[in-house]
Amino acid sequence: MARQASIAFHVEEVLNTPVISTNPVAGGDVCIATRVRLGDGRSVFVKARPGAPAGFFATEARHLTWLAAAGEGAALTPGVLGYDHECLVLEWVETGRPSAEAAERLGRALAVTHRSGAPAFGAAAEGFIGRLPQPNAPTDSWPEFYARHRVEPYLRVAFNRGRLDANEANAICALLERLEELAGPSEPPARIHGDLWSGNIIWATDGQPRVVDPAAYGGHRETDLAMLILFGTPHLDRLLAAYDEVFPIADGWRDRLAIHQLHPLLTHAATYGGGYGARAGRVARDLLARNPVQRPDPRPV
Image (cartoon, rainbow, N blue to C red; front, top):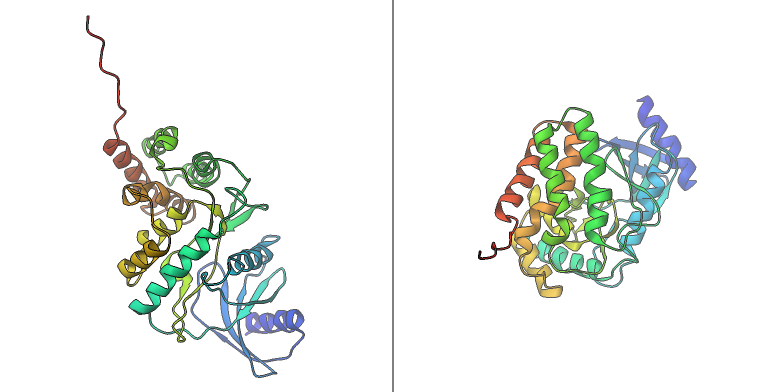
């Protein structure tokens, strides 16, 4: 009860509108999710985190706004209504069931978002991925950015917490040494969500999916696709086919998925432990085994 009263207080301060009622709803494990009914008749969605790190909700608001600014036809996000140091207030979106048609709409919209681009790989400010800070220092090369800012930081955290053994860490490091060779065709920075698993998609009753909880930055578009595949997404084949019609994916992208999945596997290993560290190690070893180093033929004597 005290927690809900605190949320109501923050919402009234942020929106300058009285709160009539609060109702907890299903949400993630990082924040408290609440539906709040306001005195003017509206309902809003509130994410709250007492003691949140400085800039936590300001960062999420900025990322949602940046994704929404991708232009006509881009992926939709709930409108940002306000925030403070402990909560973020968003437009309420009524949730329905996923459909093949909605998945196709999301695929096309995601392609438009990606194609709208970004100034560089990275972002102007640091971010968060779940509970963890996420470095975003702008970088000209995607392989360099991905190795330095998406894999190495979480490899260190997971290893230091005992959630990744030395063999697994060595395999991942060996893969990073060959990342430029294995990364596929060079592409310009895409405007990506950065944490696009199915739990961060709202299958709205109006048939227009929204994406939420971004860790957005200029990245490689295959990263979002790899995340959708890693944890499973309804009607995924229809989504990917619609995406490819709008913004064709470079040949061989399915062979590169595991590279992009290292980042979420390592952030999960650092945060939750479990088998995520071992899985990241297997991914690296499998990639290296499928792509052996090509040694030059010995010269005839």
